[in-house]
Image 1 (cartoon, rainbow, N blue to C red):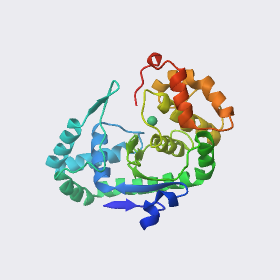
Image 2 (cartoon, protein in one colour; image 1 turned 180 degrees about the vertical axis):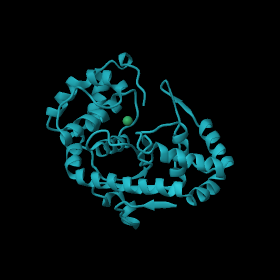
Image 3 (cartoon, rainbow, N blue to C red; image 1 turned 90 degrees about the horizontal axis):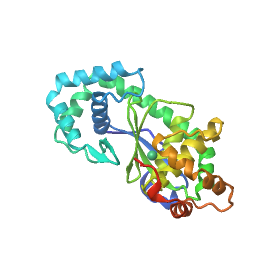
Image 4 (cartoon, rainbow, N blue to C red; image 1 turned 30 degrees about the vertical axis):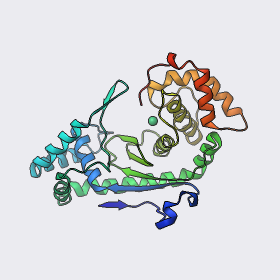
Length: 282
Ligand SMILES: [Zn+2]
């Protein structure tokens, strides 16, 4: 069920983090999750570009014809799982939580179709692109992230790749990331994989941690790889106001010789009047 095409360390070495001397991404396509993601996100029209819309819709229509009951159950399950968070409704399906009895039949039926084969092949190709770009940029970006944060970058993280025609980027917790997108600008995948990886190092808070993630990945790494300067910022727009407040402290922090980003985050929380910060969403 799991198509693993990552550079994977096997066995005990893989499980012992002290023996992993880098951020080790395992890129996988978990078929039940992949299929559920295809159907749900196509239904919600969360397309990342026009390119694959026809193929995605053809699959959804085919599945509705041959497995209507299973598709309906999946949609109901998903609707029941909608969560309200920081002023926004969102839902997320998690590869570990898809325990619907209907999934087995849904997956079996999907795998018999040419429509599915086409989407799977596009995604395998996309996985390969993500992995290659990540590895090509790893040394340059890891050096920068380490220098800015002081983090020990020894971590194994599983990346659940979804179809490139559907927009997804989320840290699922427990060293797991969901990823699928278009390449909005050069090195986009590398920059946003780092964004999600950094979520595994920071706790979610009122927005300072998330703003720092956005400073490091969306802005520092982007300008490192692609050139340019900031502000103007790139990233979640609802964090820009907080980032503006942090900017002078950030510039000072980057000049300092001993950098400890978690301590810096704590200092910011003392310095900035938290209650006055703009409303933040995850
Ligand atoms: Zn984020």
